[in-house]
Amino acid sequence: MAENLPHQMLPRANHDELAGQQFVQAMKMHVSSKITVGNHKVYEHTARQAFEKKHGRPPNTRHEVRRLMEQQPYHQMWGSLMRLGQELMWDTVIESVDRQLEDLIARATPTHRLGSLDLDPTLHQPRYLAAVDQHGQPGSYYTDTCRDDVRAGAVLDRGASIYHFGAAGGAGMEGRGRTLVQFLWEKYPDLRPSAILDIGCSVGASTLPLARYFPDAEVHAIDTAAPLLRYAHGRAEALGVRVRYAQQNGENLNFEDESLDLVVSLVVLHETSTKALPKIMSECYRVLRPGGVVAHLEVPVRYADMPNLMEQVLRDWQTYYNDEPFWGRVCETDMVAALAQAGFAKVYEGYQKQTLDPRRDGEGFTTVPDSRPGRWYVATGTKA
Image: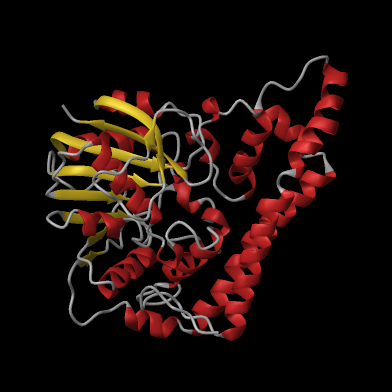
């Protein structure tokens, strides 16, 4: 089997590795499309009725429903398959990455550099990152296994395509970045940033559309994890995109006051914490120039907009069983209030339809709750 890879940094899978990865992808898709729905039937016809008989009322929170469903064999089976799929995904990718790690490190060190890479070996990982292996990825994002390591980035980039069933931009994984560009063009048509910051850039997949669609801007991207940043830098160089990568914590940015025009994050806040989130919001405000824009794109889960408690439980599975402990909390946080408390004006939230082809005359944003697949939640504001 031959692969049409989107960039030379992406780990290459041989026949057996690719077959294993495709099996895991098919398995995850089957669980998602065929087995997940059975939880609703079990809840409505068995679990909820038993709860009402015992308590004289229906469950009234997702936490009550979760504890109830955790006793149901069908739900236990579903959860086991979900976790197994996640672990197999990493296993099949890690085997491939380790086989070619030396070559990946060499590829991540270009002779001619378009952008830059600034690492800080003294930076300590925040506890909310060090306490768990995010998404169950062994070693998490920040673990160095050798000199100039890119292993975590290579594993994440390859694994993400499997996780999203090849969607969200396919193996290039630019769907979220392009969707955010579409949002910015729709809601801030006069925005002409000269300096952009992407907080929590990971492997840089969502950063690159910002650089491509705002070609006159100097684009900065930060993360706390050195292996991700090394890989992201090599990835951007391989694709011919200029980005300035730096190892920083979004709670304490190394940028001067009022030095940026646009600050964004893409599916990052749910990997922080209750204490970290307001600090990040305040830092976004500090570094923006007057008139500057902040936009946080997140998972399309707002529990306040979801009256179906069983659906809330299924979405909240990530919090308890996929090593994303802040997922549930960020999905119930009032993001508009958080931005306003940091000082931002003209604050609002909504849902943006995913696009791979941003257009100046495109439309896809709505303030009507819309958590269907292919949508992303966005919270935004401006600095007066």
